[in-house]
Length: 375
Ligand SMILES: Cc1cc2nc3c(=O)[nH]c(=O)nc-3n(C[C@H](O)[C@H](O)[C@H](O)COP(=O)(O)OP(=O)(O)OC[C@H]3O[C@@H](n4cnc5c(N)ncnc54)[C@H](O)[C@@H]3O)c2cc1C
Image (cartoon, rainbow, N blue to C red; front, top):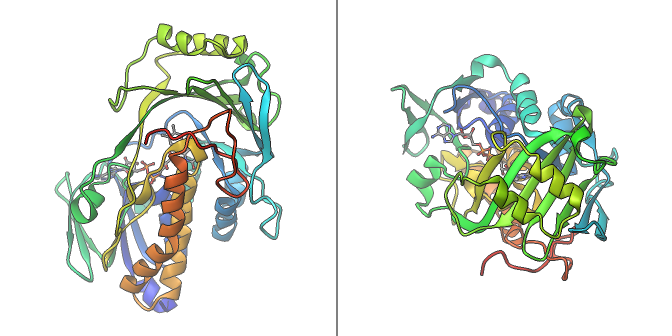
């Protein structure tokens, strides 16, 4: 689309998470009139770290926000898998480091810093908090959104960036429910000083046992903190399961005693406990004036650490498609054609958990194994 057409474009984004915030930044740079509508009255993020991959960071360079993100993250060289007792099983450089003009290392960041940095680079009058979308009406070349507070907006393009339980997806594209993985994730950020010497550098380490329990140690050196994540098998599919200290202690049987001590001392009130879900691939995630983005389109399990990265890469893909196509409808078709094969594959691969006995290549530069989390 021509620059003049892009400047006339009105865009309403439902959801101010990674997908919504990234799309708002990228589309505002295109010149479009972009507004984000977020149901929360205050942006709060789960206390946990994530790894930003080189293709994501390269988009930040394009959008002029790399330095801001670099200021609140630490570069990492590799990912290591260890047995529960600490023997190294595999150590591999993060993929993509040398794929760009500048060496781009994966960076480890706290989710709160990440979203705050995004929101700080958006004009404040473009982010509307306390707007919970209730209805969406596809009117062909435009779409109309109704909020719980009684307000309505109409836009040339509505983006459903409203996460794994997306109301936009449910009302327009698919009423299939999220799929339970048979796993729980317990996440918290602790001081690196309380990690009994297990934070030795800036690299992500995963310890695993033979009962399906994984412990991820993701250092946040710039904060002198450690993001500590225990993923374990469970039959309990309640969204926010309740667990006890005894249960956590039991999971630590067979792990390095320092991991047992860290786990035993966790503040249970600060621990975020979630049953882990993804969705099956959605056949079509766009119409002529509405598209899904991020988890709303393709929520995936966290075994590859790709969900937030793909949400941001969606924002880059949608922006490119709007530049290349002749119309919004054409751009949404192009966007899905380009992005869906990538995210379908990542959804598939992410359903494979890790298994110490079988470390095989299933994705370039990474070695997830072949144990299926579920059949
Ligand atoms: C245990 C775990 C570990 C993970 N680790 C990683 C990792 O290391 N790397 C990685 O890349 N990804 C990781 N992920 C995945 C990542 O968290 C998600 O992919 C990412 O949050 C998706 O971003 P999103 O913006 O699409 O959705 P969300 O982050 O879910 O944001 C959706 C937003 O929409 C808002 N919303 C919802 N409904 C409405 C409505 N009706 N009206 C208005 N607003 C609404 C919500 O309040 C929310 O702010 C992990 C996930 C889990 C569960």
